[in-house]
Amino acid sequence: MARFDILLNEDGSPQIEDGDVVIGESDEQNIKFILGLSKGTVAAYPLFGVDSTKFINGVNKQTALKREMQIALEADGYYDIDIDFSEGLSNIKITDGT
Image 1: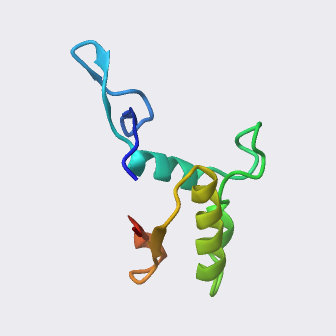
Image 2: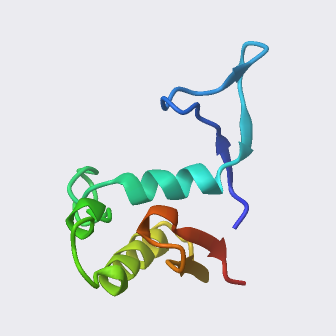
């Protein structure tokens, strides 16, 4: 993976250090952002997003959620990733599969 971008604070504001924005490895924040989007949030790409809320109370929805996550991440160029649900939906692990 290893993409670099402006790093953000937990509230979404840019990290500032010595009066400049901080640039660093941004894959984790990019993935969190992508997975937090609902479809229709990005006007130019209305099908981009995961709509994870529809999976929260579902039974046996892991396969569908994993597929939605893969589609969204691949749309942003994150190929060959592993999505691990072995510790439950509240502790999903996403790693580089290469």
